[in-house]
Every structure is written in C-alpha cells, then in structure tokens.
Length: 103
Image (cartoon, rainbow, N blue to C red; front, side):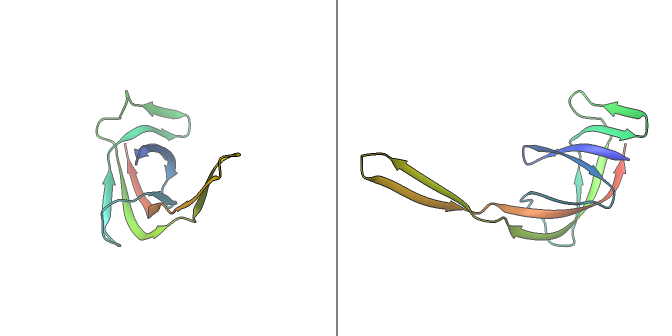
C-alpha cells in the first residue's frame, strides 16, 4: 500500500516502513505525527483519489531525527560592474519513518 502525501508545500509518495526527509516539523524526536493531507492512496489495482484530499485518510509517522541539508552556495555577479556576492544556505529538515497508512 502506498500514499501520496502533502507536507511542507511538497508532495511525496510513501509506503509503510519508509524513511523520508521533509521540511522541518515542530515535534520532538520519537514523537508520533499524524499527516492528514492525503492526496491519493493505492493498493494493487485499486486507487482512491481525493479532490483535493481524501476524507478520513491518515498517515502515522514517527520522528526519527532533525538535521540540516548540505550547504547550497549562491554566487551573484554583474559583469564589468565590480559586483560579486557570495551566500550560503542550509535548509532544516525532519526525518520521518512511515508507520501506518489508513485509508
């Protein structure tokens, strides 16, 4: 069984037992999180599609860890104008383990 969930403005295809890095969620490590924005649930040939979300469908997850992604380097330059700017960015994330999918 798999589901397509929406969290942090992004969509992910998940199945039970999978680990997933999503945008940071304010929850403690080891806490159980319930995601209720489920766009689609599928099992074999049967597929349920929401409009836009499925009513009553939930995905239960456990917070495994919090962390930061690798640094993304930003370099801006205007030619012939003596303008150069360097900047870096590291995005925070929460790693989730998908426990159950209930449709």
